[in-house]
Figure 1 (cartoon, rainbow, N blue to C red):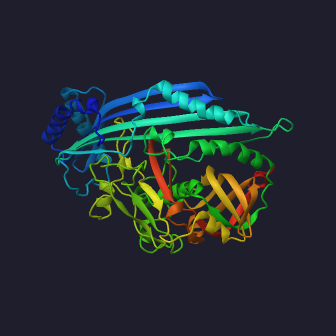
Figure 2 (cartoon, helix red, strand yellow; figure 1 turned 30 degrees about the vertical axis):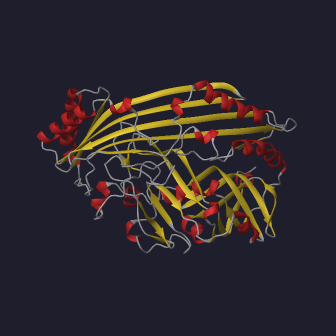
Figure 3 (cartoon, rainbow, N blue to C red; figure 1 turned 90 degrees about the vertical axis):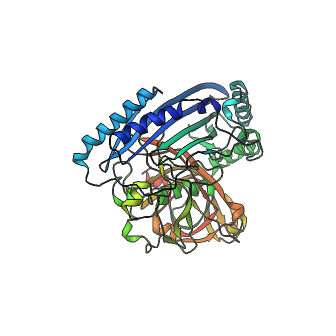
Amino acid sequence: MPRTVDESFLALPLSALTDAALTRARDLGCEHADLRVERIRTQTIRLRDARPEAFLDGEDLGLAVRVVLDGTWGFAAGVVLTAAEAVRLAEQAVAVATVSAAINSDRVELAPEPVYPDATWVSDYEIDPFTVPDAEKSGLLTEFSEQLMAADGVEHVQTSCMLVKEQKYYADTAGTRTRQQRVRLHPDFTALTVDRATGSFESMRTLAPPAGRGWEYLTGDSYDWRTELAEIPELLREKTKAPSVEAGRYDLVVDPSNLWLTIHESIGHATELDRALGYEAAYAGTSFATVDKLGTLQYGSPLMNVTGDRTAVHGLSTVGWDDEGVAGQQWDIVKDGVLAGYQVDRNMARLRGLPRSNGCAFADSSRHVPVQRMANVSLQPAPDGPTTEELIGGVQRGVYVVGDKSWSIDMQRYNFQFTGQRFYKIEGGRLAGQLRDVAYQATTTDFWGAMSVVGGPSTYVLGGAFNCGKAQPGQTAPVSHGCPTALFENVNILNTVHEAGR
């Protein structure tokens, strides 16, 4: 049965709001105007030691009007869904544009986009988690938590599951009218062990990424939760006994559960066009990958092919249309190791003379203006690439890293270091036990230039996060990053304990 947008959302006075807001904006002389109506349902379930800690439910419903008047943006938002309020917001947005025109140095012009007069899109999921009884959801999370708690050596278990259903209606003066709905969730289980003699402790969490899926993610066969939960206690015990790494140069095999975050920080943010142009600087800086380097910058090895994608199945940044009415697309960001493209919205596209936006505008609620946000930025696997086991088998002296943890990167997305959940020593093509206190450090171009083997399609995993931050006032956006396992030669490995001066 095809998925549909909830009738309760479609029953809102969408047409009346559209006619009222856009007609008033036209009457006031706007070159462009758009209306968004959004309803976002959120739920967070948290357990500690298999006991309830928090159960949070929320709903955000409102409308926003954005205009371009004399080449200047105007924006206003509210929560009353009436035609009179839509007219008032259009007038307020025009007033904002009128005042802002005095300090506007860059005329706003939007790149063209085909008109979508009556379009609907729903993300790829099977079970709407908000139709599942709360007791059933809590019960399954409790059952999984108890499985971990029952294992020898596990002192505490922290469990959380975040669920989101996002519904958006978009209309503009060109004639586009889109309705869409997407669902996402992020289950997470973390086990902690404590050495009573020394007071030291270690933790380990599940590797399952957040996903654009429904409740079937926890009950179906897309991820084997029970097997991973059964394995964590022994892996955690091994981690507590592992030797501290000897700092130096190693070949590094990076699992997708870790590499997605390196992609996010060193490629995803670095290739946002507003950062590359210097328009975005206050929140996490600009970018070393400036526009004068487009087509020439050797971002990495010739094996490196990275795409931006708003269409990936189950991707957290996947949409039918962005918040400017631009259809989801896929495009090259790095091709054969060379910088080939950026992530852009309609104004940035026209500013750079591009024929079309690639659909990267997003606002995290009706209260916020859309800003240029990240697509699903993914490293493509080698069509005939090796398995993870084959890749490890070709390494004589190295480290295999699994799972993400902490990271640090500079304001130009160039110098960085990353840690992980688990590190394994590689000797003679075999894993030789876990290591502790490991971080890998490099510059972006040196790291990606050191990539010598890219895994095949069987190693590809779509990782990601719910909470990518940007803009002022701050907004968060969900985003996925797919990648295979990959080998990086001669990477600098730090001992984090020594680096901390302990």
